Image (cartoon, rainbow, N blue to C red; front, side, top):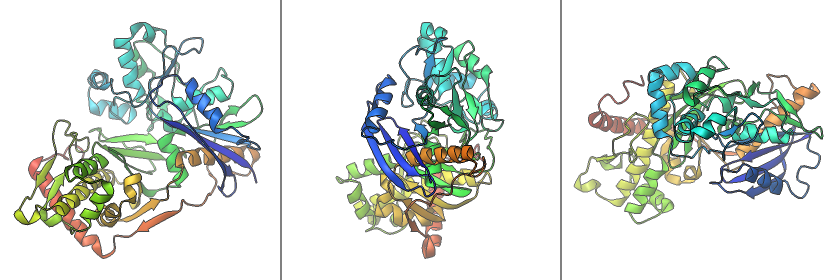
Length: 476
């Protein structure tokens, strides 16, 4: 038996779990907040120290690091930050992303190069923004890191070699999951000159040892760590319900999508995580709840007073435009208004069905590319709403799993640390991650409601096609 720790440095806090290497049982936990808008990464280290206070890491043999994705820490030739860190939620880069898309020849060219079309949050868009808006800072940039890379580097005592993993690298817009290689030419395209990129480690390969001899594993981004912590594998898809939505699945190969609808990430195990994003998820529910003068719990209760199909009421949930399908300038639609459907409960039900049908459209993009989906993990606070749990299995057309709330990114980081430690000790192979028990979950089956769910989806698709004909043609 051994003891490992996983730390997750998210946008607002640091969470640490200390686990048994054999069983994955959580032995101790720590937490500390940090400013979510502060670009000083020293705040992350202070938060880490506070979360680990009181001997939390006593007896730990290895640490894995998960951190917020899409950040940029730009270093000069001496390893000093050129400017404050740029975080993933920085919204200033939309014009830079569009500019870069055109500079390489369009969405298909980027999809072929690195498996994704430039997005405002990505490192590649941040580099272009710096080149255009802070040219003096941009000129000083000699090396590039993301938050998890920087934290690992600090824990190791700032060695000459800087590292990352394939999961976090695949979100930069500069690394191809299909070829497992960086594209230095895209750094020059965005920044105007070369910069050193970190070495990409294999999933079980350690980043190194601290001066005290503590093993530090490769680390990864939050999405990849959470997938590893959940224990998802081939045949599993994960639907995340935030204000916007995302759908990813575990797949055996990278998917090149000329339309740019699929972003081809790598995971933390050697597999791939093709991702499809939607702009509208829980914001649809919140907006409808405000319209009806209630909250999400009240909206769920109302929706369950209606019936599948919402008495013919259909909501296309494109309130902020939409990314899947690619309709950036559209608005939402409410169709099927009849006297008998104009009741609060039917509008509430239409909001839930519209949100879930939009996410099912995203699932179908993956299914259309040969990705197997045998069950769906549903994440986010809204996954606990009874109306979501009642409607999702029939609309998704498969088993739905709602895991109990837990620090899955930190757990994934700990599991990676246990893997690297096991390889070092000879008890695990580089392709044999530790077999920790699956997360405790509620499971919902579509059962006899499956034909009803299919009918609701057909009703939704008919309105979508009538309102936005051919919207999914480019995505195949």
